[in-house]
Length: 245
Image 1 (cartoon, helix red, strand yellow):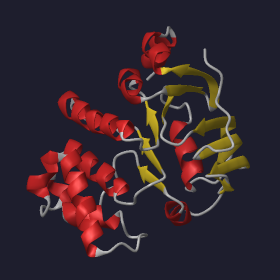
Image 2 (spheres, rainbow, N blue to C red):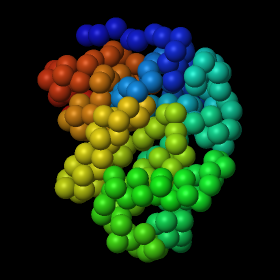
Image 3 (cartoon, rainbow, N blue to C red):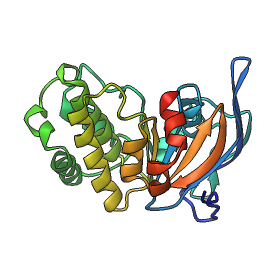
């Protein structure tokens, strides 16, 4: 088993974070780091606390204690919109697109915090459509009319339009057909190859191992270990985690 990475130059550092929802403590002394240009996964069964951890990082569920640093700046408890301005872009569980808007309008919403010129935004839109060519024919379609997999493409593209320092994805394979899931993870793999910093929260260990450099294993609100992608793919923990997923 590899040891947790600690770095003063990490894009994201979570230090000893504990989080309570209502009267129930969900996270217990969680620590992790994500280096610039690295793709890191958080894996674990349902109820492990993965989504609460995402909420704590993004300001949706402020932690009870601990520190969360983005590029060295402590952001624990800050509102989500302030985190977005610091370069943290979230693709939430079940996508959270603006269903009544067109695909193009959804994508442009991702750039709302930027003061980019029209020409730059047009280039960024083209980059998203190059990454997800299936969306080209739907650029002016109502986003809510798309399939679940296509909506996931829109959600990822919207996050990329923010030019994020950190791209955070919560269960991006959830509810998708295998073919579309493979297409979307192929796009994430290309982003990783380009050096986009990614934190991936995922139950599907095979998919996580495909694109991540290393993974944190989470159970019952705690980080219980770290593994490289190769270790994750062949680990005996895989049987336990997937049988409880």
